[in-house]
Image (cartoon, rainbow, N blue to C red; front, side, top):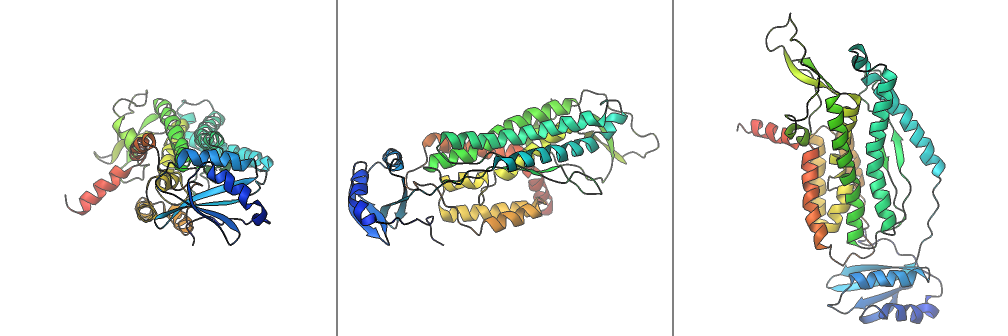
Length: 385
């Protein structure tokens, strides 16, 4: 596969070549210019500033219906010009249909999650629980995707509105949460690595913030319960483990089952539907921040490191998913990894320093939203430490 996206070829470049060259040479010092397979190609002198010059060039080319690609080829910097591809308009009817379908499936999920709270009197009706879960999970997912969408719009990237994906509710013995998440589709490439980073980072940051608030509110509304030893429970993200002494259900601890032997039960928390929505939001944040393929973390990694390092990170991400029990997700990422990330239009200019600093924050967000500490403890036990 080529390291660059396929570049379209225009008709009659020969007659327009001089005009295009004058636009390019107004922004860059050109060492050599030529037509290669019908594509205007310019080899730039080094060193010279490229980031701001390329942005100005894009604005000027846009008036001519053209676009540019800036890449490294060996030790040379190559600029190629191509017709700007048309952007197919989105059919927002599909977005609305999926949105309402996901509201329905998440409502059913919340309905089933609420049954015990209705029995205890904590909720007046499972309908209230269904509405609470649906509103909470749709808000967490929606804020995540709108973070992407608004950032894409600000960066001049053509992108669709969010597509919510309905999923099975927890019926017939199936573990389901009523949704497979939400996505937006980019219809054009980011202008440079800064824009690629911003689009990748905006969703997880906003989603993490709202998921944290949602979980804290939901925990106060949750209830203590005695759980039989050996029962399967949801793993707690590291953030919830750290704040567990400060964020607890407001209700009292129920009496230990009178007929049970000591140690037969352990104290746990039955998550309110809103708290469960916060937990789901954390897991979504963790999965999206994995530095693999076309995930949010994959965009961030593509803006930070070279191709070899990105492939290593993708492999580690797939291993993490398998170890964490996310086998379908691991297979999905493995499939996506077969396709090379196209990168931004300007793949030469470096990422800004402030974004490099923010990448450290994103690593912290990934760790806080994950349950990697369980895997570390399990590995230590396996090693006998």
